[in-house]
Amino acid sequence: MTSNEVLRRLEQTGALLNGHFELRSGLHSDRYFQCANALRYPRVAGDLCAALAARLRAALPDAAVDAVIAPALGGIIVGHELARALDAPCIFAEKQDGRLALRRFRIDAGRSYVVAEDVITRGGRVQETVDIVEAGGGRVAAIAVLVDRSGGAARFRYPTFSLLEMTPVTWQPEACPLCAGGDKPVHPGS
Image (tube, rainbow, N blue to C red; front, side, top):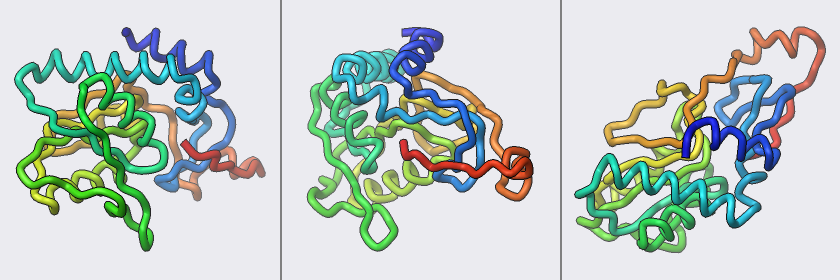
């Protein structure tokens, strides 16, 4: 699946929005990826994640993947569908006291995990998930995301794969021209 095909699917499902948005990172932007709109269509979610799994397998043909782990909430469906495509189990981390934690699952020491997420801007939730895997004695085989909106600036110690890499314009809140024009940002969630 090409980047243009991915972008077309995201636009068709309403997953790429235009307006004034506050991102999870705190930055403001005039474009927003609300991947939940694409992921609400099971076939679209399956197709996107199968394409992501194919990229991962092509680049790392010998990599063992024992499980997929995703941060809740946005990454859960991506993790599940990616795990389906990789024929592996899926677990997720969720918020506890303001940080991601494993509440329902555990990391199996020595096992290999792919960290899955829907969208990254700075990669904070992905890094928190990587930290959980490492703290539990697991190994991170790769990171797989549908949309890398950092334009490749979000860097990790592990191979990182995305279906779409974009760098929408972002501003610090105090430098946001949309705010300066009196417009209030919205935070619709991923």
